[in-house]
Image 1 (cartoon, one colour):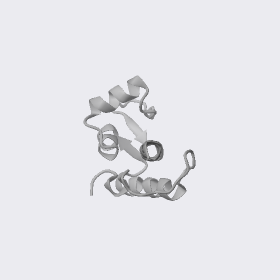
Image 2 (tube, rainbow, N blue to C red):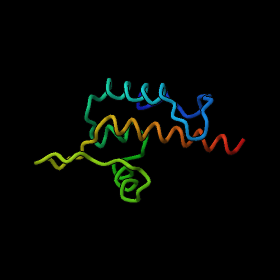
Image 3 (cartoon, one colour):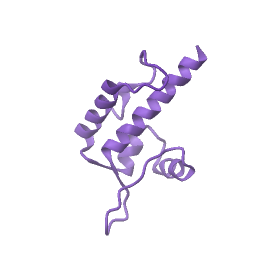
Amino acid sequence: MTGLGMFHPSEQRSTAMNDADPDTAEEIKSALLTKFGPLMSAKEVVSALKLNSVDALRMARKRGTLKLAPLPVHGRRALLFATEQVAQVAHGLIQTVDENKEQLM
């Protein structure tokens, strides 16, 4: 299974509009930490968030639609991201999808 396939937004959840689902948030964090460790490359973030490319990640960050900041690593050009932050972003995306589905019903 790649990325966050086991946490597909179509799963049935009964959450209130702004309530966090700590089990799901912890499950996502645990899965990402197990698979990637504490740091993720841009390619790994693309895979985990099911984005199309590293350029899509860059543009989403530039537009402000994806609140994900790279960690400053002296002497490295490659972007590295904290896995915990990626997990928070993934959980937020899933919540947004769930909230939109609730509004449509």
